[in-house]
Image 1 (cartoon, rainbow, N blue to C red):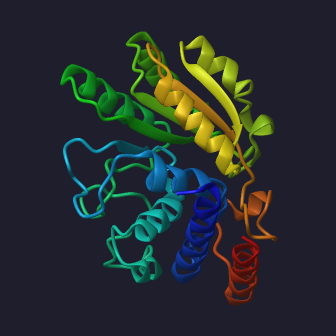
Image 2 (cartoon, rainbow, N blue to C red):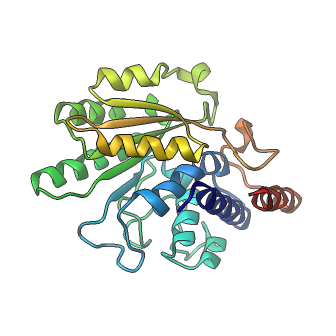
Length: 275
């Protein structure tokens, strides 16, 4: 897909995020919207996957370590054809398979159940190591939150990945600078993020994570990097695409009411038309 086609798709993913969280009357729109461009590039351009065969053996693996941004993942999976987009409206409803956090047992396209912050990268490292042991060619991708990387387990996993030279592993940090309690540097600063990953023997790429061309170049560079894992530190805008949510910490975990939903969808309709 061209960058413009990917941008249009990411805009549709954002519509799905807003629709799902509005229907649920709960959920996490801010970090889902900031990562929508990364979700879109991974599932529509980067990864070797097949919606018709979600468990195919040689598929690339994806772990959403910041599992609370499940609306972003679900909207992307629906857009990619893993399940009907209409099902997004059942998010968090009793009896729905689309739970508040990803569930690998019931949702096609989900490789790892996640949501306990800090744990997803360990699972992704295990997948990458398994590929090395089994001499398989698939790659593993893990999306972490910048607030999440305050968790110690992230760095235990990073140490192991660097030590084992897992060049089939790509970690993406969604660096929108806001977590539930406020700016990450005020809560418990993980900066400088790039230098930390470099210290754990990662190849590090800093990008604007809402710029499709920079995203493309970063993933191409990651694939070409041998002998060490890659960390892409993606500077993003929390709530990206919805005027009143952008860079507002209050939209970390809150659903829009009917009027706000209408405004958000109008914003996204205009953005789509402009593309």
